[in-house]
Length: 314
Image 1 (cartoon, one colour):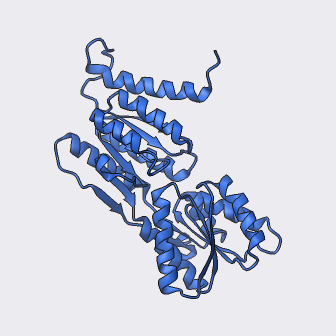
Image 2 (cartoon, rainbow, N blue to C red):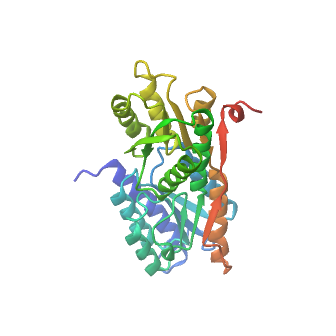
């Protein structure tokens, strides 16, 4: 029987976690130090520089405290994430860090973890039922959207705007809410023409942007919910005759790629998150809980605006 490389990779990762977690149990391998705490982290995707940086931060923080981490990539697939989490939960890690593909659809996995006594710390994008998780650590995503709207309104107060969304992620829902709030309250001449799904990826956003440009000749601004989406929009705009340089793009992430695009003038701004701080705080909460300390349920990490001036600074 042929087995896909993806399945083999997932099984290999989970075997590593299983071997590590069972190290102190009867009948299990004794090659591991039973005092080492083992953790798993599941990302909606690792095809995004922000999540790669966040994974690196979590791994460094776990290892600095003597723990070990197994990383799982859902590849934007809710079913794969559910299966990954189910396998990980069966191995009884000390805790799971979770970046959900679907903020409401992940509920079944959270129920399973709760029943198994495995604490879950949600990272970057919140979930629907907070009672099922130990804690949530995320950027202030509403404020990230507000910053984007203010940056756009400063240069185009009467902008004709399209929003390129990723509505299965609560973080993105919050960003759009913040953007809409400022647009409606502070820039009353600004018009939101359309909101379209871009899947949170460069590849998903590009054809959506091409379609929007064709449908809305007066469109002169875009709010894309993350840097990969924004870069996809920029590519579409640059490839459309007569539109290059005429459509301002604001976004959220503050990734190296996003900041480089701001420097190059492809993006107007990006509301910068801090994956290093999200990872550090999330790991700190996990270890505090395991050490019997009370932890905060909802932690918001501040964001800051990066425009051309900040990007070109020292």
